[in-house]
Amino acid sequence: MEIYSVPEIARDVFWVGAKDWTRRMFDALVPLPQGTSYNAYLVKGEEKTALIDTVNPGFEGEFEDKINLVSSLEKLDYLIMNHAEPDHSSAIRYIMDRAPGSVLVTTERGVKMARLYHDLPDARIKVVADGDVIDLGGKNLRFIEAPWLHWPETMFTYLPEDKVLFPCDFFGAHTAQGVYDEDLEDLIPLAKRYYGEIMMPFGNMGAKALEKIKDLDIAIITPSHGPIYKNPQRILEPYTKWTAGKTDNKALIVYVSMWGSTKLMVRTIAETLLKEGVDVRIYDLEVADTGDIARELVDSRAVIIGAPTVLAGMHPLALYGTYLVKALKPPAKYGVILGSFGWGGGALKQAGDILVPSKMEIIGTLQVKGKPSEEDLKKVEEIGRELAKKMK
Ligand code: FEO
Image (cartoon, rainbow, N blue to C red; front, side, top):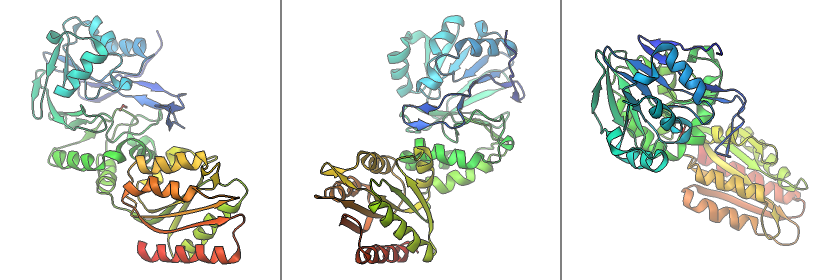
């Protein structure tokens, strides 16, 4: 058998998850430059044993071996499903088939999903609600409903005796590196990227969840992806800012350029903004990692879309980028749309239509025919100065 590491993260609490070092995409949407981990935890009380979450498809055997290194899977009493997405729940049947006395513990909404995906009989499901407790003998698991983080059924589990919070995806980071937060200097940018990709559309629910846990005595936070926080403040502080939608004096520019005209326009506004003291980030959608864009959206105060017209509408990559900006619901307050066309425009209107529901105030738009003239670029500079003034 392969030699596995099963760290004891608190007394009789073990990490039994799996590392997926080489996975490069999640949900066919989110790039994973450092892979990811599917964290699951075994909690041994004096009388009962509980497993918190499972692993992604393909890791069942490794998972089973790890559980058996520190306990006996066959004797497992509870399987806690904090979240039903398959990267954490797909091994439920595998585990419960090998632990005949085990019961799945989840929220009312989680039950519907468990029935749908795992075909479990009611006798093997225990529904819990906010504040319910399961006593393992010297260790109590308390459940905290945290809906829409980021699926409707999600909950956190709290272990007061060891001050451990198991928040599933919340506070996560997609990386296979490290065990504890202290192992990764660049962890917060990775967590921010993850927040932008997964949690930002549910920022209000995130703020509510933080309010719910604010009086808990937390020594360890154990997310379902990435390292475990021995220093909870390291992630609680940025999450407080991000879920509140606090932005920096920063403009994010995402653009596509076919023959250089749109590129010239976005570079001109970037220089103007820099002169006005605005921090600027630029991503060319032809080569950009969408995770980087999601990360920058978390605290950018303005978003500038550069979109040329092709075939009477936005360039498809710009369409994708603009839709992403809208779908991720960033806290940005201001927007600008720039673009160019050869014989007939259309991109500008299409970009505007997409961004209207975002509640961003559109500070300026400009669409030029062919290469931007000096006069056109002066107009771009004017829009940049106006934007910088608004952003202060
Ligand atoms: Fe990591 Fe929403 O699953």
